[in-house]
Length: 68
Image 1 (spheres, rainbow, N blue to C red):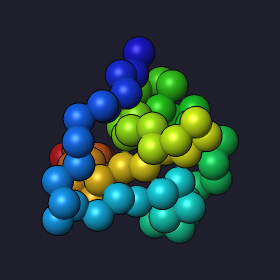
Image 2 (image 1 turned 180 degrees about the vertical axis):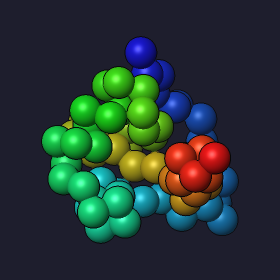
Image 3 (image 1 turned 90 degrees about the vertical axis):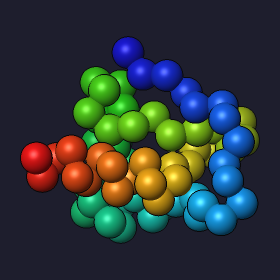
Image 4 (image 1 turned 90 degrees about the horizontal axis):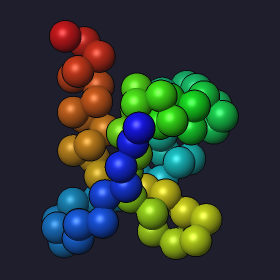
């Protein structure tokens, strides 16, 4: 089970969109959302009714956890 982050993003923290995540992981949208559902990838935060974003830190932490 994943949880949505509702905390505010620090002003100096950039957000990555699903398109950014797709470009970085070289995986398709369905795979990313499947990973979110399975708890493999962070849920990020909803930025609108149909928009999701991740902080660079969330993405970097996920990458580091995969390398360990």
